[in-house]
Length: 151
Figure 1 (spheres, rainbow, N blue to C red):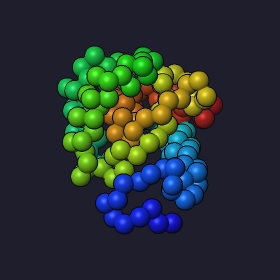
Figure 2 (figure 1 turned 90 degrees about the vertical axis):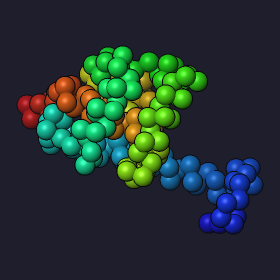
Figure 3 (figure 1 turned 30 degrees about the vertical axis):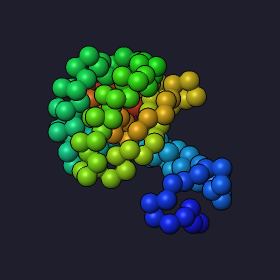
Figure 4 (figure 1 turned 135 degrees about the vertical axis):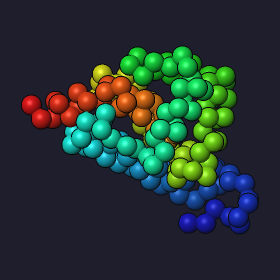
C-alpha cells in the first residue's frame, strides 16, 4: 500500500485501506497484551526484565514522575491531560533511539490488581507501558498472575 512519496503528509480521508491499517494496529496491540500476560503466567513479574535497560527506565521514571504509585489505579484523565501528555512526551523522547517502537500504541492495565478487561485497560504508548510495568514488577505487584496460574 502506498500512502504517497516519503515526507508527504497523510490525509486519512484519502488513504486507501486506512481501515485495514487500523485493524493491523489493533491486532498488534492485542498480540502484545496477550504475550505479556502469558509471560506473567510463566514467570513472576518481580523476576522479569522487559528491556535491556529496565534499571535506567525505572530510575528515570521515578525522577520524572515521583508522585506515581504503581500499586494504585492510573488516573487516565490526568495521564492524557495537556500537562500529562507533555510530561510523558518529554519522558518518552529520551528513548527514541534506544527502544524499538517506543511510541507504538499498546494496552495497559489501569490497576495491577486486575486482569486485562474492557474497563480495566487503557490505551498507552509503549514507553508508558514499559515504565509502569517495570515499576509494578519491581514491587512484586504482578507476581499474583504467576501464583494464580500455578495454584
